[in-house]
Image 1: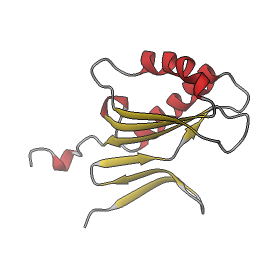
Image 2: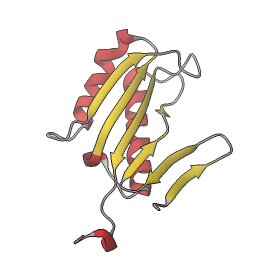
Image 3: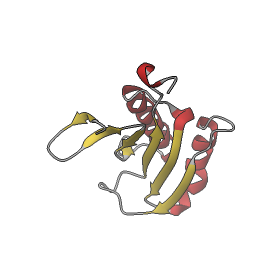
Amino acid sequence: MTDITRYETNQRMSQVVHHGDVVYLAGQVGNAGDSVADQTRTCLERVEKLLAKANSNKYRILQTTIWLADMADFAEMNEVWDAWVPEGHAPARACGEAKLALPELRVEILVIAAAQPRVHDRGR
């Protein structure tokens, strides 16, 4: 049976769930009231930090779902996203419009990634 490891957990949710070779992140948001570009940058910084906790990184992202409070912000978000995604490593991605937890939030990013193989798993 594969262990499940949870990071930054509270009664409601975990920011990271690591199961087997897969890492699941909770939706990451920026700072309420910041521009769409700044919120996107903050989301992506948080994604990188959380992936590192589970032995992964942005090169290993498998799938991303991006929620925008308004699809009119699509181009502004994509400008930051496109500069952040490593060339040749774009994940499967969906983007849609949704009402987010606070009206000042403009972007939320959810990520599923592959974990780095653990040392004892290599060679199998």
